[in-house]
Amino acid sequence: MVLLAVITACFIVQIVLAAPPVAAVIGGLEPTTDIASNPKMLYIAIGILGATVMPHNLYLHSSIVQTRAKALQRPSYDDILQIVARDKTRLKLSGFPSTRHKGSFEMKKFTCIALVGVVVSTSGALAAPQSLYGKTLRVTWNESRSQRVRGEGEFKSVSIPLSYTVYVSSKGQIFKRLTSTNASGNHTGSKDRVGMSGSDDQGAGSISFSGNTLISTTNNGGLGRRIRISFDGGSLCSAEVLTGKAGIGAATVRSNATGKMLEFESVSAGAASCSVQEGNAFAN
Image (tube, rainbow, N blue to C red; front, side, top):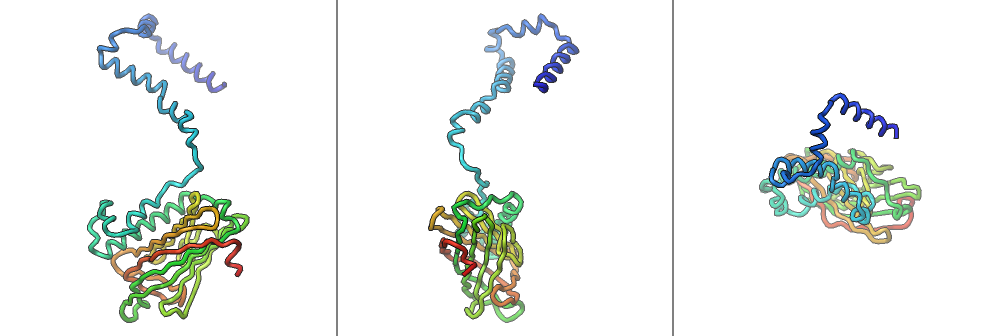
C-alpha cells in the first residue's frame, strides 16, 4: 500500500508540473470515428490496448497453462548430442560440413560432449529422485579404439569392456565408479568419486538428474564421454554411451587398468546394457 501511495503521489505531481490543457485531455477521451479511417490513430490505440491489457499475461495466468504445469525440468541438451551420436548422415542433415575427415568428425563429437559438461557443471544439477534412493545403477559397454601405449609401436584396433556404477544412498548421497579392463583382459582398474562432481582425469564423471534421467559427462585428456541412463523408478533402466576425441591428432589418457599413458587415434562406444540393483553394490 505504501508503494502504491508513493506511485500515486508521483503521478499527481507530474500531472501538476506538466499542466496539460484540461479541455483537450477530456476531449481526447471522447470516442471518435476517425480511429477507423486514420491508420496512425488505430496503430496507437492498438498499442495502448495491448500494453494495458497484455493478452499474453492473461494467457500465462489462465487455467489453460496452470493445468499443464509439470515438475521442474532441466533444459534439454540431449538433442545436441543426438545429432552427432548416430552417423555421418545425421551430421550432414544438421548443417555440419562434410565429415570425410575422421579428425573433424571426432572433434565435433568431443566438442558437444564438452559443452554438455560445461552446462552440467554451471547450471546446478538437480538432486537424485527419491525412487533411486538405496539403489545402484550399473551400465556396461565396449569401446572400439585405435590405440597404443604412448610412443610405443603402431596403433592397434582393440575392444575395451567398461562399466559405470552409480549408487544413491538412503540420504541421497552419490557414489560412482568407472571400471575398465585392458585389451588383453589381464588388468582391471577403477576410478571412484563421491558426489555429483568429478569430471577430471581422476574422477568418474560429473552427473546430473533430469526427472528419471541421469546424465554423466567426463572430459579427460582430449577424450570425452557421456553416459545417459533412463530409469522407470522401479527395476528397469536403459542406457546410451557416446564417446569422442578432440582434434585430428592423438588424444592421451592414463589407463584405468594399467596406469600407463595411452594414445588414441579414434574411439567409439558400442551398445550399452543397464541394470538396477537394490542396495549398495560398492559394499559387495
